[in-house]
Image (cartoon, rainbow, N blue to C red; front, side):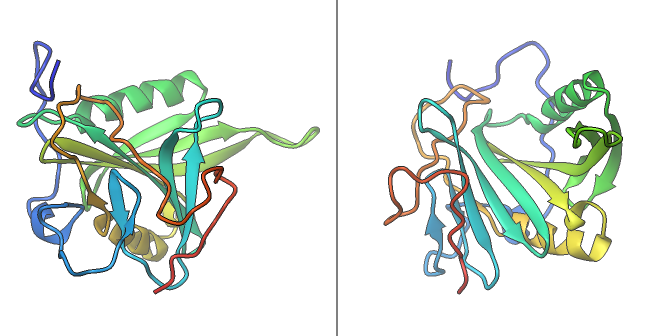
Length: 211
């Protein structure tokens, strides 16, 4: 199976109409002379106060997500291979919603700057003897050319519109590097440590990405 459409009901792409100008960008659309931190499937422009966390799969050591800490918030990003002319976000958003509901959480679909997004309250583990708590998160997604980029905003960016706008701008700044190799839709586009990082880097490591 390649990255062409599969299944009986391909879904339309979900992305801002000006995505190719305002982001998230494909590597072919990005400014070639702008400095970026190269993480394989994504490139991140450095900025003052930005921290990077690489989320690593236990056992395999594979990098499965990039965490960006900024403005008292966190943004997790994951790039996936996608069909050429249909999208993944509508279907993936529905699956995320069902998973959260099955855990006892609540969800609400709202119209955001990138299109439909999922605002969720997710049950979180509380301290012994303390009442249950919920974690608030915003799930956002954009279908690009042969890729899909998922983001999860947590912290103040999920609650405060002003901080949320800063996290949205951070999501727009991500550049996706799909590559030319055939990949099944939904496969994670390979991520790797930035050049010069130790090979045993883990999610606990937070190098700064200040300009």
